[in-house]
Length: 74
Image 1 (tube, one colour):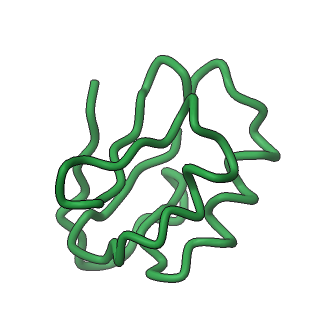
Image 2 (cartoon, rainbow, N blue to C red):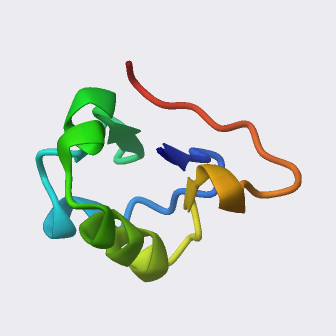
Image 3 (cartoon, one colour):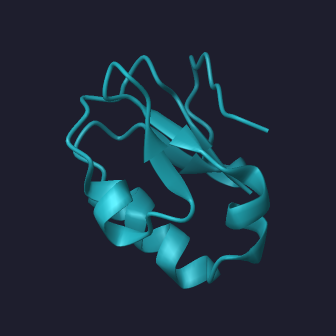
């Protein structure tokens, strides 16, 4: 599963450009993940979003940052 550390999000929106069904931005421009859409998404596309994130705010379960306050929308 993919997660977001919103404290690292810079609001660039690359993830939304990659897959707007999974990634959204809240009123502050920070990433929000739709978990249901993420479960149905192509895993390669999600990995691409992780690798393109300029703030390194996106990660998969196995790649969780050491000090993270990960949040997401259920």
